Length: 165
Image (tube, rainbow, N blue to C red; front, top):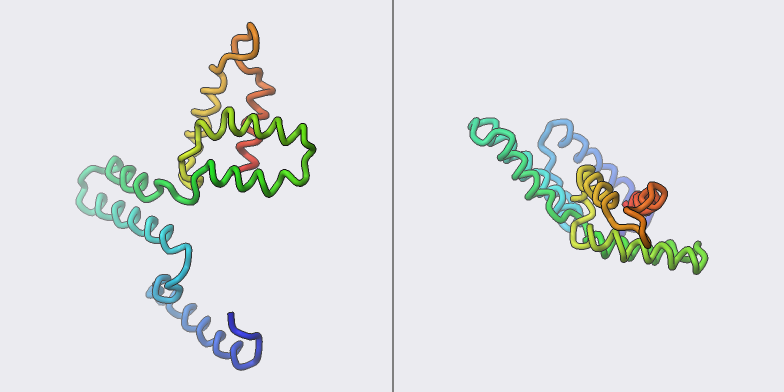
């Protein structure tokens, strides 16, 4: 936010040197240096998870179950909801697609991805969630008399999910 000039560069070099020395000494506190940062909630969640993990190992109570619960609470709803994020992603990318492709992707998004992941935070979607979703797609009834979705269709749906994430 400061104008780029010799005085401001010199001042910021001193700030950078102080931050680097605090990091080297192990005394750096992110919130003290960047109080208005949007990353503070994520950092606080990670610190809470680390404290819970250390406490569980220190006391020997609960073991991994307590740690897993603490991590799950800390990671819960990290980032925007999938629905909001996917719609924003879609709006930003639709300029490069044909109308027919836009209709096909919107159908996939509204028919499969948003109903399953919609309210979940993007940062909290895990590999096991994705694998569970893929397994669920294998059981979805296909068109007409077909038993399920084809492997090609499942891969198209998973490809769109991969692009969004």
